[in-house]
Image 1 (cartoon, rainbow, N blue to C red):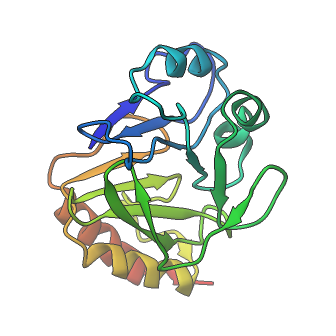
Image 2 (cartoon, rainbow, N blue to C red):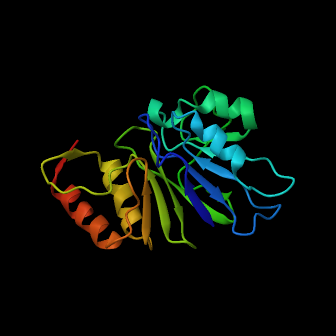
Length: 198
C-alpha cells in the first residue's frame, strides 16, 4: 500500500489529506482519500497521480470527522471524481454511514473502523492490521498530562487502540508518528486513566 500526503506542502490551513493506492494499482484495488481538507491544489495533485488504468482516480473518501479543515473540499471532490463518501455521522455529501468495528477495503488492504469519541462525537480512527498503521484524524493519541478530563467512551477506544500492533500513526495534522509508537500510546492511556472522567 502506498500512502501519499497531498497537503504536506499546503500554504493554507488544512488537515492532512492522505491518498491510499494499492502497490500494483490492480483493478480491484480501491483508490481512497482519507479526509479531503481545504486546499484546492489537492485536485490537481490527484489528477497527476498514476492511479491505475481503467479506474476512477478517487473511488472512496473516508472522513475522520466533520470539522471544516477536514471536509471543506468535499463538494468539489464529489463533483470532480464522484466517489462514495463514508463518515461516522450523516451530513451533507456523505453516502455511507460507518459503524464501529466495520471493515472496509482501502487500496489493497483491509481496515477496521474504530469510533473514538472525544475530539468530536463522530471521530474515528482507521486501522490496518496487515500494515500496522493507524490513521487517527484529530483523535489525541499523545496525552502527556493527567490534568485533562476524558469520556469513558474515549478511554475504552484508547484501550482498544493500545492493544493493536501499530508501528506508524498518520495524524490529521503534522508528521507521522513512527518512533516508540506503542510506548507513547500506553503512556497516554495511563495518563487518561489517571485523569478526571466526565
